View 1 (tube, helix red, strand yellow):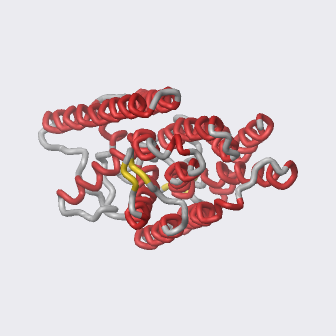
View 2: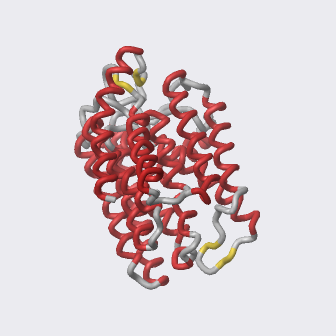
View 3: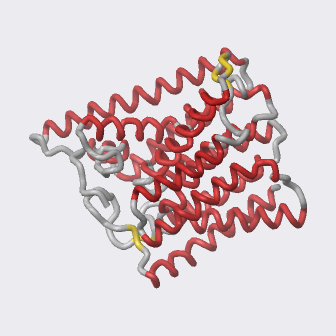
Amino acid sequence: MLLAILGTFVLSLVFCPLIIKICKRLSLYDEVDPRKIHTGNIPRLGGIAVFASLLIVWFFVRFVFKIVVLSSYWPLFIGFAIILIFGILDDIFNMRAKLKFLMQICAALIVSVSPYHFTTFLYWKFPPFVGEILTFFWIISIVNAYNLIDGMDCVCSGISFFACFSIGFMLFKAHNGMSLIYFMLCASLLGFMYWNKPNAKIFLGDGGSQTLGYLIAVSPFFFFDNPRFNFREIPMMVLMCSIPLTDVIAAVWRRLREHRKIFSPDRAHIHHKLLNIGFSKNAAILFLLLIQATVTLAIIISYFMKDLAAICLMAFCLIFVWVIFIIFHYLNRAVNLSHKGKLEDHPMAEH
């Protein structure tokens, strides 16, 4: 297990500079526009390095050492393949937003109509169709949430690292072989983050951020054989994804309120607000990662608590995250008003 994790880290560390060279040769850069924080030409195919490292080591472990058996999870991995492949194609060919969304719908449908969907919320057992609908919208929301939070160096990769670590920990405690996959993904993200730290030399791209969101979104379905998690899986996942999920809900509400397209970009995400208030880039990154680390610690602690106490702890932490978002929303508004109406959250042209 440790060798697999170390091998994934090393491969990711080695693959990133190779991907950077290929992107420079083919001019595959993340476009610079007023919505973006970065300047200069930055390669955007980091997702290839992250998931190529993971898949190469996983295939080696699976077929050489026969450690992990994953055949029963095929609907989840078909969805994974769709999100990853079309995300990478989007990074290369800049696909239309409607086509990208259609592929997300396909992946979410495959999972939601399979046996892998939500079945309970606390003590309420869903009718199957309710669980399927909830699962569908959950996957779509989280995939896009992690894509939208990927607007600053190390934010999406760092938040995903902590989320995957908590998932890996709980799967390990549940004696589920999928824990190795999530720990390997953590290692791959660490290797990538070396090249993605400020000032970044490579970005995740849609192929990276959306696939990370997908793997985090479907993670509760690996706990189906452990009744301990049926009671708390939804509260746990909402807390785990609270930063990107709150950010995407705020973005959708903001755009609907202003009669804009849901997918129209702007400069009013949480990382934009922190910079607008006066945070340096490094301080904003550290702040968001500290919040996610706190959330991760709370989730791990809740594992050892009884159901009611665990739910109370997770609810407290979720409220804590929401309060932080509300505080910085009004601080950002105050800064904008002090600048005589030169708002930072005006709509940008869709691209």
